[in-house]
Image (tube, rainbow, N blue to C red; front, side, top):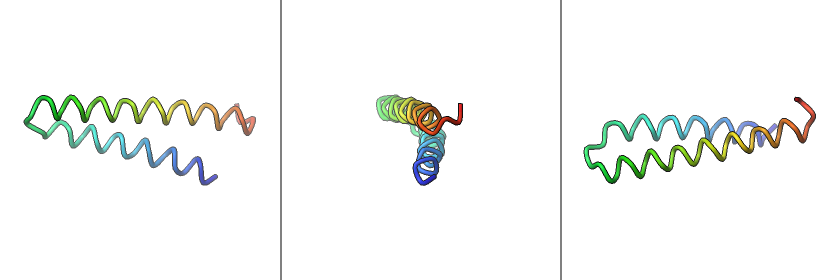
Length: 58
């Protein structure tokens, strides 16, 4: 259950990071922030799938 809460927190953090990145003026910083949020989302989705299969929810 704690792992699921952490995965949801990563989803929320990635969403906040991408929202904040839209307000940054520097192109290089903006693209780095979008890349970071994308990697966070990919990692969270993979972790979520692993948790769902591990506990036989799917």
